Amino acid sequence: MTSPHVVAVIPAAGVGSRMQADRPKQYLSLAGKTILEHTVTLLLNHPSVSRVVIAISHDDDFIHSLPIIANANIDLVEGGKTRADSVLNALATLPEESWALVHDAARPCVSHQDIDALLAVMNNSNTTGGILASPVRDTMKRACDHGQASLISHTESRENLWHALTPQLFPTGVLLRALNKALSNSVTITDEASAIEYAGGKVALINGNPANIKITHPADLPLAEFYIKQTHKVNE
Ligand SMILES: Nc1ccn([C@@H]2O[C@H](COP(=O)(O)OP(=O)(O)OP(=O)(O)O)[C@@H](O)[C@H]2O)c(=O)n1
Ligand SMILES: C[C@](O)(CO)[C@H](O)COP(=O)(O)O
Image (cartoon, rainbow, N blue to C red; front, top):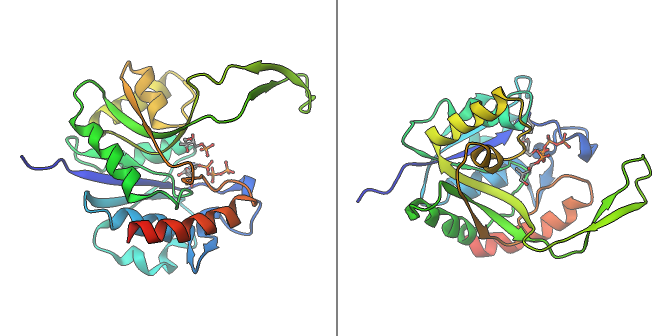
């Protein structure tokens, strides 16, 4: 049986406002390469990934300075106003029968081992697809919504609560239709799984390494640098 066509989709069209850097965070340097180069390289080097599609901002001034972009298995598409729009634009260029492995550019520390565990969902007929996720480990508090951020409103149960990570893996055609349905109904979509859930699909949670952090704030950079050095040893 031929293995399904898996295409990595990398949303990389954000501005990284929370990072407060002089450039979009995916172009900040970690361990000698940009964050985007780390992410693209690890996906290109995975044996099950046939192509990589990167969604970039229409005014991206950095992408063409990255040597890896010349790779024949990389396509660039224009991103959109939101992450979901950027993913949609990339999905529109893929074969309907492929599987889309959607992974944030800002998550350069994912391991091939975790990607292998996620890919197994393609053989599970009981679910639409799956996502890497990590169980919540802290007590969760909901803040008061009276503008007093430091006050606790109440404690939420953390039972069965998970952090959604990426990659998130779904059949391309199913995901495209689910995203279009959710967005056309003005549903707030912050990950692919929420669109699949909205469309009535079943999403498998695959326990992933919490080192697969999304670089969001300045404090994440030294942590990501440490994890990247660990992940390189594992992925090689
Ligand atoms: N319109 C957008 C917004 C985000 N992203 C991408 O989605 C991923 C996760 O989003 P996030 O961490 O929020 O990145 P930014 O939107 O850049 O960050 P911020 O919210 O701090 O501005 C990032 O790789 C980002 O580049 C995208 O492709 N298109
Ligand atoms: C997709 C994601 O990384 C899963 O946790 C997250 O939803 C992205 O959120 P962001 O606000 O776009 O960074």
